[in-house]
Image (cartoon, rainbow, N blue to C red; front, top):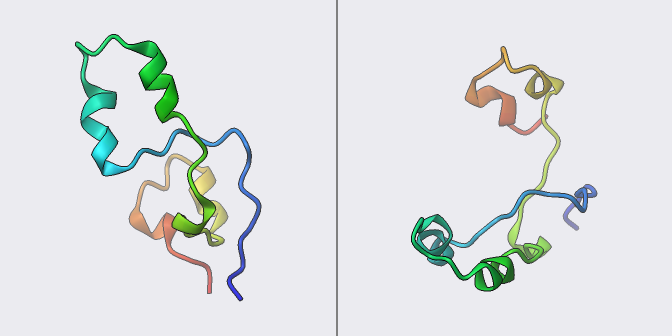
Length: 70
């Protein structure tokens, strides 16, 4: 069994790589199509794990902040 901590419903938009170009195109003006990209990301495609509380301080700007807790 995989532990899945709760993810807050107001999570940032997560796009698949195939959506990057459309999302970042400054000339694309179809707001309705862009809004359609903002769908909840499938939980089965995410990995969640606990990290150190060091991540809460911007002074701690290292990759070790996102390493899984043991």
